Length: 400
Image (tube, rainbow, N blue to C red; front, side, top):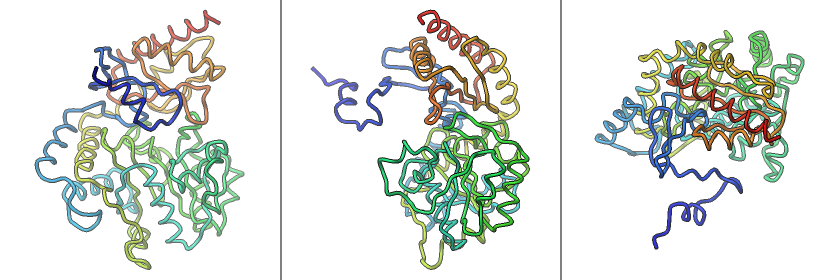
């Protein structure tokens, strides 16, 4: 008897938990996944904020195929002029609408973008202290993990980087902790894994002013929020501020692995001297991933996907009303549905999967359900998704 894919998964694939979902997906299209039995699942989390233009968008697939016909890997990043890289870099710079963010360093992932940005900030400022927020998540490598604002998540991996401090997201009083010892603060416009936490425009403007006062670099992590998730292409654009370093990944690849950190030339240039090759990567900016990313960026603008994000967000908030739902919070298509406990959330998620709807919880807010569908989701699909969610909540409520 042939060994099944499920058995190979259980026997040979390293696990991240003792209870993986273990859905065997054979195909994905638009906002749907299809398992080995042909059952469809509406993907209400976009593979965790990745498939912003949906799964296998035709323009992304065409760009990938065209690039495959030309070339794939040629040389380590930064040595050859490769059209997918330079075209994407130019498009990213234009998308920021910033006069300062004019250079891009491509990576393979979000956590690598964080690592590169931390090195860049230390190298440019000559300082070592980095500040992040409590309950923030910026990646799982040791440097990025050092920024994590949850002790239980990182205690088993100490020692981590020294000179890391934490402040409260959205708390103006804590900004005084940013001093002339601080190389950079790494912050999300919307706290992602803390359960979609928002801070005011006035807070971010005060933060920017504090960074200017102390000559500390402002690193904005838009790994989840970038590429339209909050209704503007970059979430920082709604705050009337500019970062010194901008991070991107997840949704920027259209399903392909890619990340980036962006900064002004005078800052980025510091990675090229003392030492030369201060930051290097073999596969960062892979031409196929860059081609997919450029197609994703162009699709968002060409298909006007930003135009209806807020309308779709409001539809979720209007429909998701139930005595068991404490709050629906968020911005754009980055929402959290707060329940009374993780037990309730897990039961609802499991019931939704049975009914063909995939959702999730948050690393540091396991009593809330994640909603982050592809931007291409239709109003009719939102109504279907909300109906399944409400039925699942009612089903669990009746059992209890």
